[in-house]
Amino acid sequence: MNPKPLSSPSTYTQGHSAAVVASHASRTVENSAAFLLPHLQPHFTIVDLGCGPGTITRGFCPHVPNGSVIGIDAAGSVIEMARSGAPESEYPNLSFRVGDITSRLPCDDNSVDVVYTSQVLFHIPAPVRVIKEALRVLKPGGMLAMRETDTLIYHPANAGTEAFTATMAKAVSSPGAQGIGSGRRIHLWAQEAGFERPKMQVRAGATCHPAPDESKWWANIQVERLQGEIGRKWVGELQLVSQDEIDAMIAGLKTWGDSPEAWYVALQGEVICWK
Image (tube, rainbow, N blue to C red):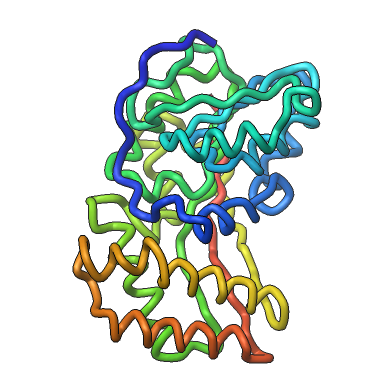
């Protein structure tokens, strides 16, 4: 690894409030990278792009005991959180750094075994550029593994959950990002970047939060988002909705979370590309 200067962060719109970080911290290697784990070797170097609080990143460490894991994220506060949750005494092969993944990656050509992204590329206006950088830094035979959001489902739906899902989609894509629906396209972006279709594994996975406990937890996370930074941004800076509409979304999410039939699913595209 050869550190190089990194430029300013990109068009991420969800902020880094406690509620947002809590939802990100629920992601683990087991629930977000199981499709990749069978392909790992003990000596591999893994780079996690847009690593957030590092819960997935540090989960890779036992799978590459003779290798190394590097997490990169644009938010310095989140990187500090990632570092505090992964002391060197427990994770000697792990490091984190602040950087803009939409710029040149801080890696030499042909130096990395695995580049991994989870819920990152759909926040970016030009994901093909990021994928081209992954192709550059990967060793021959190396892997780009991507897990990106495609579809969000709240069942039983109500007016509040429907409005929340629709507004979330608008907010994510408002700065020109690819947005929700990206999971079905990531293998196409990879082909555009230079990966070959016969050297891809194209699959799908899902995140599920059913009643009773998980649905209530997930509803509360979304309510906290709407009562905090994200709600203020939707009403103020982005002017997507009114405060009354935010209040209606909160009521709908609470109703959904308390339903004994509550079932939330996020469908994810899961793709591995070999160089």
